[in-house]
Amino acid sequence: MTDQDIHSNSNNSERINTPNNKLTQNSTSDNSVHPFYDTKISKCHGDVNDSGLGSSRIISKKRNITEDRALPTAKMDLNPQRGFMFYDLNDIETAVSEVKACERELSDVESKLLDLTEEIRNREAKIIDLEDEISELQETKCELEAENQKIRTSFKGYLKESISRNGDKLATKISNLENELEHQKFSHAEEIKDLMNREDFRSKVYANIINELETKLKDLRAISRSQKEQLSDSMRQNRRLEAEKEYLEELTQNSRKRIEDLREKMQQKLTRIVEYEKELNFNRRQLLAIEKRSAELEIERDLLREQRAISEERFKSMNSEIINMSSALQAANCKISKTKLDEKKRIQTIVESLFHRAEKGSKATRDLAAYLENEKKSLMANNQRMELTINDLRLTCSNAEQEISKANKEIMRMRSSIAKYVKDKYTTEITVTKCLQNAGIFPPKLDNQKSSKCLQTTLGLDVQKSLQLISNKIDCLLRENENLKKHLATQQSKILEECSKNAAHVNENCNQLEARLQSAREDNKQLCIQQILLRHQLETKRFGIEKYAEDKREHQEKLSDFGPPMRYKSIGPMKPIRVNSGKLGLSIFYLDI
Image (tube, rainbow, N blue to C red):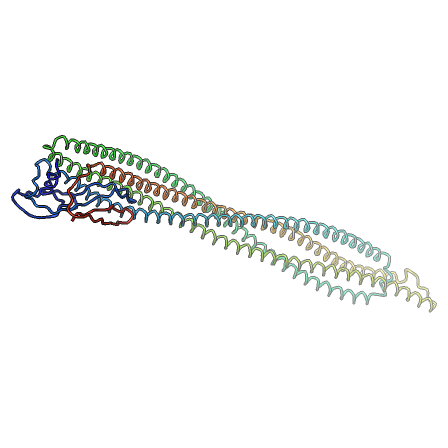
């Protein structure tokens, strides 16, 4: 085919009227003369930009229809190539916009990944702080237990020593006093006659002292009653605390059940995610099959193009078939894009539902944590109240011990007064005997026996009453001492119970902190799952971009292999024009004026 025939082919060639690759034929007669510009694209192996496209030349020539006469077989030689070339340029622009959007999405996803990693690090730091607090609480617990054991041992030793000392001293003193009183009753009956007045006076004094001691005993009894009331109140508080402890145990059991339910739900969600991933893999396989089918269709289109050179007469019918095949490919591509968008939307809905559920679970855990903190505060307040009551009981015990010491001092004073009375009696006897001897009177021992017997009996009755009162008082004091010892023992047992309760509360607090640690670890696991999902999305997007690049390369190779370069007769000089279009820069075009 000559150059004139090729130039004449441009007079009756088809033009592209719309961007949708619709071809129309300009039917012209050989006699009509209309000058026009006809653009034709030919391959040039000169420049190669970043996009991988070879440079092309657009040659425009002013022609006259009468000069060139086209052959009937060469009229539509370049129209398919030109139509596909413009279609490819539009596809490249859309691809550039899609690549930019994908890059933006990748940057957003990477920023989200950085935020998630920061959150994970903050959670891990919080977990480490909580573990340090737990270790510190355990150390303080051990120290408190050691101090409590030391206090118990020291208190028990002190109680044993004090009880043994006081009991032995009181027993010896009481036995000595009783022996002395009996000896005085039987040996000094006659000497008591002269000292009746003094004994009456002293008996009155002793009666007053006994009345004072009785009043003090009444006060001590009132104090013991108040202490009993306080003990009953403390027992009520202990019962209330036990009820609260049972309630807290029930709450902990319920919370553990809820945590187990949440774990089961998370396992179900993970199984669902695995099923969704299987569905995605199945859809990907279907997409690969569709793409293989499209590749086969493209191969068939190439075969049809090769057959076009053999059979020029069937060129028009083959061209229409190629157009139909391209429309089918467009429909298939549209369907593929729609399926991809549907899959992306479904994945986004799944991820959003997971995020909402995770947020709801975190809110529930936060509410539980706040409720547990409030309970912790109430328990601490109750502990402070119990400590105050314990301090009050200790003060009452110290007051009772002081009163016991005062009573012991009064007993010692009574014994010292009795000793003084004995000494005065001996001195009076000696003075009376000396005076009588100086006067020359020597009284017999049994003088005035009846009167002495009567006086002795009356005096013996008074002495017995006084002895009975003193012995009763000593018995009462001993009973009170025993009661106080029992009270101290009960208080000690209560202190031990409260220490055990405090240890139990500390253990509960440690368990609560461990539960918080477990919840924080579960949150960390959820964040890791979210990170894995985001990475999976990134991998899918990268896979799509790589696939798009491969498709683009294949398309460019097909364009390069679409048809051989055409030669035209140039009229005038050629002016190169550079066309820039971002990263996917087009090649150099040449215009023939």
